[in-house]
Length: 182
Image (cartoon, rainbow, N blue to C red):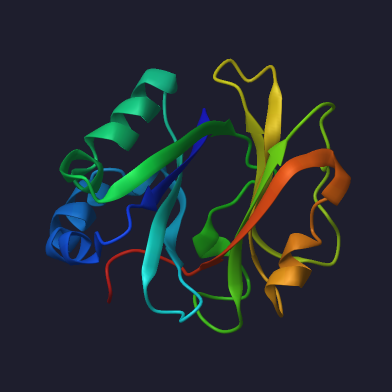
C-alpha cells in the first residue's frame, strides 16, 4: 500500500529542525527500500524548509501512522501537523527514475484536497511528472484528492495540472529532491 505523508513545519522550528537533521536522515534510512519520493517543501526564498514530503510503500495504515508519528521531528515538535493519506502511484516508478534528473528547473508539490466526485484520475499528458496519484481513504475506497510532484515553469502552471473546480483547495509548494547529500 502506498502512502503520502506531508509533515508541515511549525513556525519558528527551523533551529530544532536543523539540530535534528542527522536523526531525521537516520530514521529515513530505515525506509530507503520503501521510498517512492521524498524531499522538503520550501518557502518562496527557495532555501527555508516549510515541510517534508515522503511517499512510501508500506504494509498497512498502522505502519504508515507509525512512520509518520515516530519520526524524530514529529516527536520533538518540529511539525505543526501531518497529512497522511493512502496514495496510488499512477506512474509506477520512484522519483529516482524521473528522466529529468534530481536538479534543474522549478519543482513543486501540488496537493488537491478533493470534494465530491473523483477527478484527475488519469495521468495528465505532456507534463514533467515526478510522482502523481490520487489521495485515498485508509481502505482505499474513497477519493480524497490528488497529489503530484512535478517540474513546471512556475506555481500557476503547476496548479493547472489539476481541475480547479473539483477541489475544495489546491496547494502548491516549492519542493526539491530529498535525501542525504552525496
